[in-house]
Length: 131
Length: 286
Image (cartoon, rainbow over all chains, first blue to last red; front, side, top):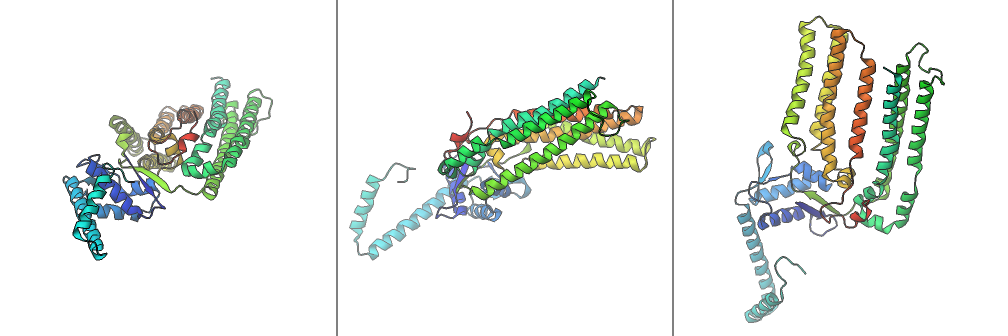
């Protein structure tokens, strides 16, 4: 199981790591209790500064996805997939609210926004495929 | 024991190190560049052609091997005057000649490797896409627990016997304890090396050879940890029986290096499991 980072991507590298680990937790590839590599190993493998990986791990830990147990290592938490789902839902909710507020601000009616959402959902690609 | 046996072992070492290993290593030149940046290599086909044509390192190794074998043969056939003192026995002259060519050859090889890595670092920018496994690397994944326990036990036993002989036996003195310190130092050095291999940052060779490379390196590291035990056993036999085992020890060392070289020769390059470095597979030798 591998992760890939692209240093030239506009998305910060630590966020790429966070996102990919969260995705693997959500998909069940990383099961609760699974050990993750040390910050040193992952930073070395990705040829990154250790602080970058440490920041990603800290964020995952703060979100309740992983648990660092001292010298024993870093593990996926028992309820990690639920946490990831909660994070995704909350992020989606925030994004939709921001979008709706922006569209209302542009003068669109609630009915028009609803129609736009329904149209978008109708032409949306299957899950997991980003155009 | 005939000196032809010494000669044969030394020639085997020379052929392995300066003929077979360089030939084996040549096929990894392009995968190493492709590993660092496949897009760069795809854009610089002229460099590919130049690297494929270049044979100076290989030819230099062949010349070194030929000169080494010719000098050893000259000594063996008494065609060359003994360069390390006329009183020395022939096996010792062969040993000294071989050691000289071996050390100088390795130094030359090391310098060439550093120059190659410097060239790569200067001319080939690192790729923007980088991959890593999410699986932690542990020694237990590479070498079974019974083997590790056996190596630890042998190391402790070796040092324990030496300390016991020094403390309770007839042996002692600065030279004896100096030898014990050397054995302890070697044991600690190889233990630290073996500890560090699973943890070290992966390099070109890890990606070119895949997981096999680290597995081989860990096995070689554990194999090397047995070396102080072998050296200690030989020295202890000399101490307790009065036998002169210098020649045997030298031949064991050279055979040991030959086995390590054979382990390296068994490595084969692989394409990475993921498509992290697109185009990499193009440069993996078929």
